[in-house]
Amino acid sequence: MDEGTIRELREDDIRQIMDIEKESFSTPWTEAAFLAEIYKSYSLSRVLMIGSRLVGYLCVNLILDEGHILNLAVHPDFRRRGLATRLIHEAFAELKKKGCRFIYLEVRGSNTVAKEFYLQFGFSDAGLRKKYYTNPVEDAVLMMRHL
Ligand SMILES: CC(C)(COP(=O)(O)OP(=O)(O)OC[C@H]1O[C@@H](n2cnc3c(N)ncnc32)[C@H](O)[C@@H]1OP(=O)(O)O)[C@@H](O)C(=O)NCCC(=O)NCCS
Image 1 (cartoon, protein in one colour):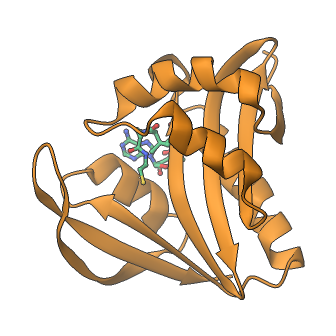
Image 2 (spheres, protein in one colour):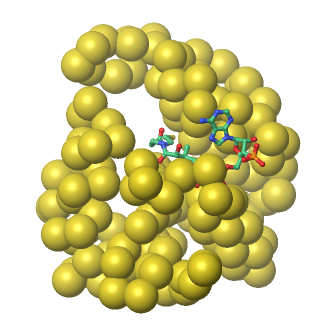
């Protein structure tokens, strides 16, 4: 199987991204939020393409030596094939080159799949952000790892 290629996020990707985003999150990002990532100098945003089909994406911000994973999703039909792992590995290698030393992220307390995913990458719980999410209101688990 074609395992796809990873490249930078472009404006014409956003339509395909929105389909995955809406299936993946109860409070999906807007198109404008993705557009903003493309033009932020401190954003590293990548998509994973299989042929012309966009099947996953990752948005990370890097400020000084601190990376913050803002968004990560893989199309439901393509999960559990190591694609998010590839997106993360490639992004981490690039972040490290740019001087990143710590990575943070927030995840819904009930999102056990994502928590499992990040735990196996060496992330650990670093705290709780009370009522961080809406629809439904829920605390975020803050996770962190050194790079
Ligand atoms: C979390 C997500 C990005 C993982 O994508 P993926 O491409 O399926 O992940 P991978 O195939 O690279 O999984 C790597 C490892 O993570 C863990 N993992 C992934 N999905 C899992 C699941 N459903 N249950 C338990 N562990 C899981 C496993 O350890 C897996 O390794 P294995 O398949 O060898 O057992 C995907 O499930 C997703 O898009 N979820 C909805 C959006 C979301 O919650 N994003 C994160 C918000 S911060």
